[in-house]
Length: 136
Image (tube, rainbow, N blue to C red; front, side, top):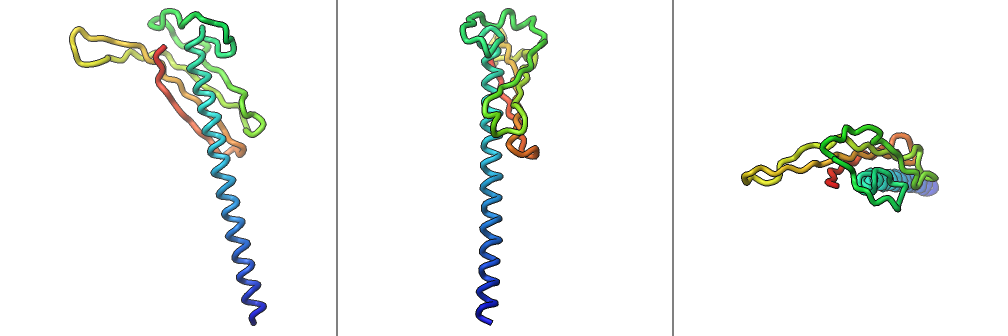
């Protein structure tokens, strides 16, 4: 009887250990997915900051005339951390939105670009989507 009780206690402990290992793995996968989405988001912001090309570090021209920008070719990808990810993270820079700053008169406006990034973790079910609003 004691041997049966000890066997049941051992099986229960192994089941709990397996569950904790799965939870830790899922947590790590979510963190990797989020970090990859953040990296892609920074890539989209860099696309706006350095002459519309995040891979050209020596580019110094800012985005020309953001008021007339229509958002063409504003999608890209970042291949960081690809050894751990099911898919490459991607970003999309949308056309600028005109946002009023303050309540004073005369009205002042700025153009803010929504930048959205999506990344998939090591499993296809782990997806992170982040968004920022960037003013070049």
